[in-house]
Image (cartoon, rainbow, N blue to C red; front, side, top):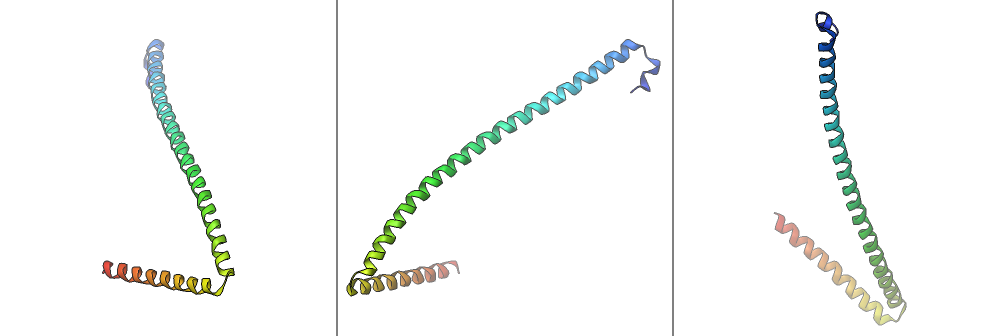
Length: 111
């Protein structure tokens, strides 16, 4: 830029440099505005994800409560008499049979 300004008067060079500075300032301002909007979008996204994770945490706590209650009932049922054990075996066999039936049906449906 200095090579071009040798034959020009100092005020023309100053105007040219001033115009260049304004152009670069505008470009920088545009980039800063983009970065600010991107940062705000990221902040909103992070807040949404934190709310989602907090909701999942409370859901897991409620499921944990349900499962612990089920395990207690299951344990008390297995500790009781022989009739309950027989019922437990029938229920377990039935659930395993339903699982294999569903697996077979889904396997056939894919092909």
